Image (cartoon, rainbow, N blue to C red; front, top):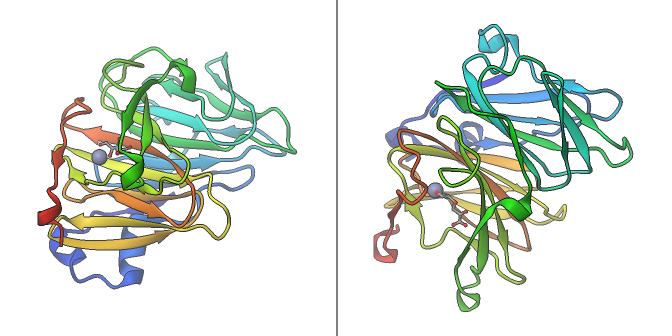
Length: 275
Ligand SMILES: O=C[C@H](O)[C@@H](O)CC(=O)C(=O)O
Ligand SMILES: [Zn+2]
């Protein structure tokens, strides 16, 4: 497990490209037959990936220092690969591509499996602290609440699918969903926003090998960018905008944790305030 301590707003202003990338970008998440994990101290989110090929992957990490992974945590797991099955304390959940599984606090044995090693499941895992147990539930993309945003003339027409949120799968604090861009639309989350009461993580995927997303971060008056490749994730502290433009099509998963559970609690940044 890799640990990322929080960088302050003021030190971030002076970061070189490499310093910015090592603080905020997670470059490698999906490896065969093992769980990769990054522990960010931003709202203590755990960001993970697993690709079961030859054998199942167990959700376990001694460095978390609790009796088991979900002893004091909950998790959202979205499959971005081939079909797979997740077993949680003996209960099996079948996940096609873009299906999500919510696992509440208290689930002891979580086993991640692929149906076909030739086309393995690719599990993206986002785990946050929990204070209460909520039932495990699978949410297919067809069951997620769609929100239509943006306009073609601004190249930002997109649909936000919410899986884990106040009106969907219940959780202690995790909110999770996926944003799909309309054809020829490359911008996400512009106009940009911050939410001072929550941290957020973006996973960019469904990208060609040479496609890049220019992900914009930083305080609205001090923006920086990260150049992001397929299946890489970005940590967004509460003071940072999080917006991107792709050189070609892409999809992204967003996940948030923090003080409130109010998706709409965003402070929109006026275009005149961006620097
Ligand atoms: O706080 C909310 C998150 O940043 C995302 O839901 C935004 C997003 O998916 C988008 O505008 O496309
Ligand atoms: Zn946001």
